[in-house]
Length: 62
Ligand code: SF4
Image 1 (cartoon, rainbow, N blue to C red):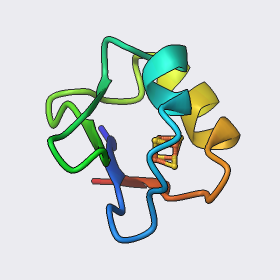
Image 2 (spheres, rainbow, N blue to C red):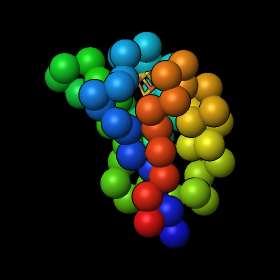
Image 3 (cartoon, rainbow, N blue to C red):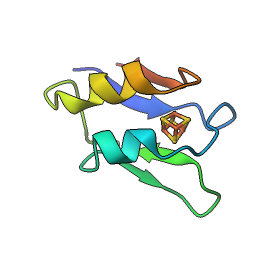
């Protein structure tokens, strides 16, 4: 199953993904989003967060 990850170099810290999908995304100490490494595409809000990210820096990886 694919897992979500955040390209932190691109993240602008808007917290949109955390608001949309708080079970998977949280902010780190540098105000960059992180995805739960155990999360996968069975959590529907991950795709919503991805689609809503203003800089499109959330991606899937296998
Ligand atoms: S929505 Fe995108 S830019 Fe905003 S905090 Fe999440 S990963 Fe970063």
